[in-house]
Image (cartoon, rainbow, N blue to C red; front, side, top):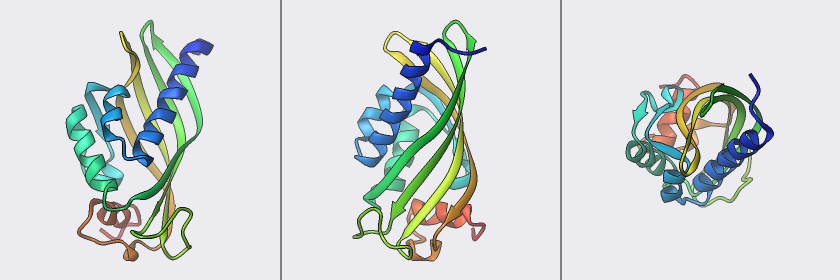
Length: 165
């Protein structure tokens, strides 16, 4: 069942706030995007799911901090109502990350791009819509994961995405 225009707009704004929080490294703002008991299943990148907003913030911070230049974009989103105060969505997304010291968009040899789909569940709270669960499905990637430090989560994630780990 389709969501109302207002609910869809709020959820799409939530996705934008998530992307901006990642790219500005405003990790504290993720608390305004997710439920306290959020489940992030980024197994394709991080090897295992993470539960709870603090655990998700910790893994996101660890993955992004060493690599300060990134752009995350939600491209196309299909939102469906699953109840009076719940919804699910499928979003095609792109993540562009650049090796330390480089600026976005970087060069082809310093940039790694991940094309993925986010499968999300949302819940309406007193503070508005919040992300309750996300499953990341990597569709494809571009770039040389070998340029990334294998000791960092991003380096490991890119190797996992390309099948090198």
